[in-house]
Length: 360
Ligand SMILES: *Cc1c(COP(=O)(O)O)cnc(C)c1O
Image 1 (cartoon, helix red, strand yellow):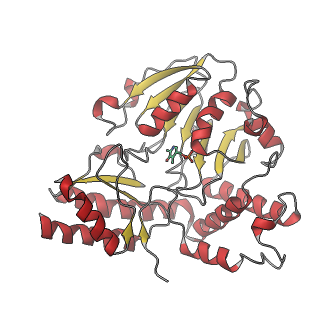
Image 2: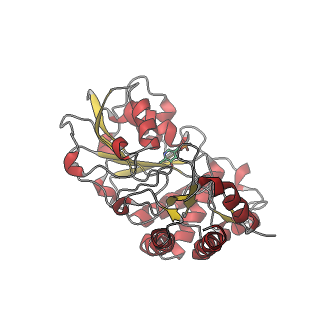
Image 3: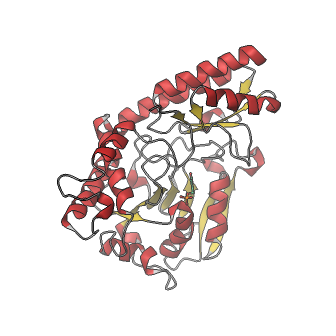
């Protein structure tokens, strides 16, 4: 068996010990005689698995008791509708910050449910910056302020949670959740699809302040009403049971690694290795402003894009896959989620140097 260094933006690499444990437990979970996939979501075994996953996530992120943790489905793209349906709470609209492809999608979808005020946009920079907080034109009557914490495609990331005063901050954290500690109390709600930094596709994590739920628009599907989901402990409908189980194993793995403080150090070391090299050479470049470069997704360009295909082919021959940039921006993108070991980034930088020496 050979495992590659998988730089995919998502679904993405998972920690090998988690995959091994899942393989061992595949046919018989803890003497139950069943695979987790075969268990009733209302059975004693699975209820314990889900409770353990929630408890570990609460510990890792230091989620206070007045926040609900919801295990949902539909991904961040469904949340683009579910958020306004649940959180407009009688307000006419909400503020959105436009920092790239994913926030644009959130904005388009929210317009179906309320008035969207784009309070700031990085369009003029070609989405290579985060608009400075003092330039945001926030509406004090907004239901919430929505941001995308980390733009998976453009590779821009907020260094910290912006201060938006009393209006609840809502964040799409799909590609940065669990990469470093966050102060959950700065957010009214945050959400993330699991397939970047948590586990298999199919699970969506929502963390929402309790006082914000219970006022969903009447058109909200019951399965997407945060109050209904919370009141039923995420079991109003059948949750993505196997994905929750794997997520729980990943949470345990993160705890064993030293939690999110240790993860941040690990992720900063990996990102620095790659960005430092990008800044030292004229053969490759990072398009993103230095103060908002993503720790998780690093887009970069070769001096001559005619070399892109040869670069990707050579990388693949060396066991490094999924480095092609998103079609909307071109070039390359290396995603360095928690499960990417530093050895993967060392191998990538060594290959980039070798390629530069041959073609530079
Ligand atoms: C991947 C991603 C999405 C889309 O998630 P789906 O699970 O496909 O709905 C949305 N936002 C961000 C920031 C992402 O990285």
